[in-house]
Length: 155
Image (cartoon, rainbow, N blue to C red; front, top):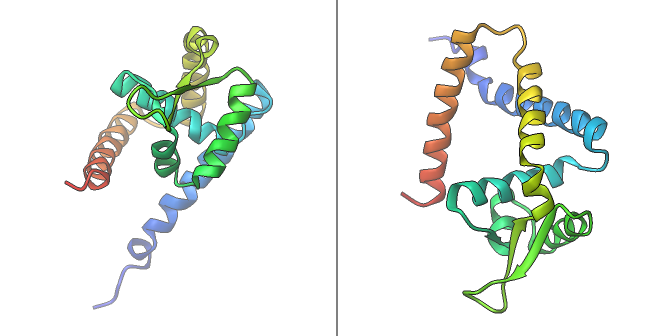
């Protein structure tokens, strides 16, 4: 039985589209927020995700693991974002050797502005796609996310 070359390379399409979205986001971020790199945006996304999902900051070590970079690289990127007033570092109450990373008060105050920016980015990204297709896409994306979260937690 002949294989379907399109099916065999769908994973390449996923990686390619993720890369294109990352570059598109980085370009828009550079235009609107000057100095945020794609690497820093991954850190910001994880810090905000953790804050809104769990109601607290994230340990530097966990942040590094979640964005798949070394602890020293995470620390350097976080330091630049702290210096820019975007993130804050505080000693952990649970482990005095550890550091907790949270969005800064300044960034939390800009939450609505950031949300509007991200929603306009998403609208631009999805322009010309049928609303039913978008709904189906996000339903599938949610299921993929759930599976990956379970996998990450070893369940």
